[in-house]
Length: 116
Image 1 (tube, rainbow, N blue to C red):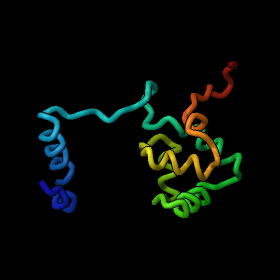
Image 2 (cartoon, rainbow, N blue to C red):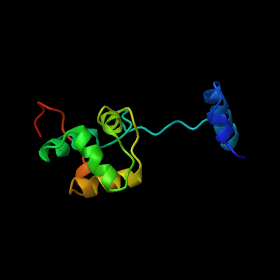
Image 3 (cartoon, rainbow, N blue to C red):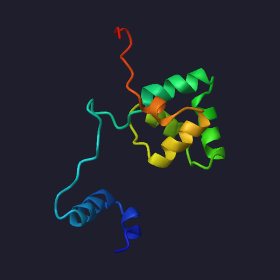
């Protein structure tokens, strides 16, 4: 079934939910979230690493584009504010651009002011 015609209609959200429902046997699957309800595991570490490299969100987006990943400043903002999921490809490119490891990018960060 070709889904492209769903994207150009005003009622596309309900149509897409219908298609999603049909594909999964009638049950809508919830989007995955972390234990804290966040959409990604990297937001705090991404902010920290970006600042350590003295990069603005726009600068990081430019580096990601040069690395072959279609991101703009708004995407970086949405990741850092927990409003966007991050794909595995994006994680890999972020690690390369920020010269870090997957483990460092996804590690748990203690909340500010807490003692560890």
